[in-house]
Image (tube, rainbow, N blue to C red; front, side):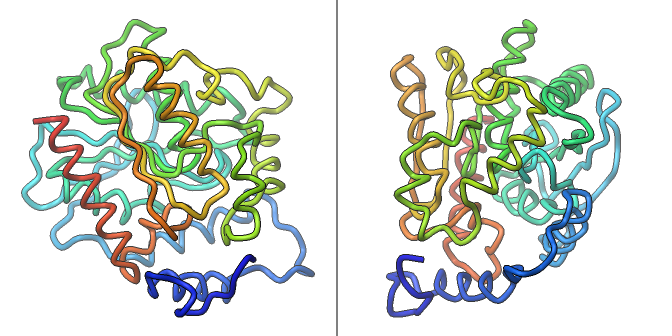
Amino acid sequence: MSRENNVADYKDPQIAAVRQLLAAMATPLDAPELSFAERRPGMDAFGAASPLPDGCKVETLTLGGVPAEKLTPKGADAGRILFYVHGGGYCLGSPTSHRALVARIAEAAGAVAYVVDYRLAPEHPFPAAVDDAVAAYRAVLNDGAQPGRIVIGGDSAGGGLTFATALALRAAGLPAPGGLYAISPWADLTQSGGAYVAKAAGDPMLDKAGLDNFAAGYLNGQDARAPLASPVFGDLSGLPPVLIQVGGEEVLLTDSTTLAEKIALGGGDVTLRVWPEMIHVWHFFAAQLDAGMRASQEAGAWIKARTA
């Protein structure tokens, strides 16, 4: 890393403490490599350890044949919907791993959240995740939701899937949502952005080799430049309003800046928020990191404004 995880090295001392926590949790270099299936319980346990907002109701359901969770924070507007696709490199993650993160954002938005349990790679490679997201979204519409009161959101791979879903909905002739929200989106599965080099020494969570491994598992030999796999290579004109939040110290930084540039050049409404010193999906650490809670609240306010 480019600097130590000392409090004095950061304007926000809380991020140094989070980095120290991540360093203590890191897998030893000589440990045997685990399969994606073996890694999934650990990610779920990490997410499940974070408490839900008081009074948040959790229900399991299916949407168009796709398993999902419905999160209803206290006082939520039943007609305002955060349709969320989780991160995990398309190979890890579930509603369990992301339940608390999504519930905090939904609470701030005064929204009901649906967290889609899409099929994971390598067992179910591209475009299974996109197909499941579209099927689940279609089911939400069929249940009577107003598309303009839905925001599709996601983090990391789910951030890329947010844009892929929007492109697939457009191709299918389905109504667009009222907005798109992405946290630290992984939207270029070729790993070609400048941040993969510029931030390589400072990102405690992701690196090019690890992302290459996720991409290989998801793509199963298919073209990484396919727009539904890597939305940065798609036609991003005509999308609904977009909010992107990304940490200033992550290798996915240029995925976000490239998305924002292409949306803006296409005449779109895009808000790009780069949070200095923050790491990949820092919202996960809201219990220890005030910036994680502030980012969640910022997102909630934006979602509420888009779905009034």
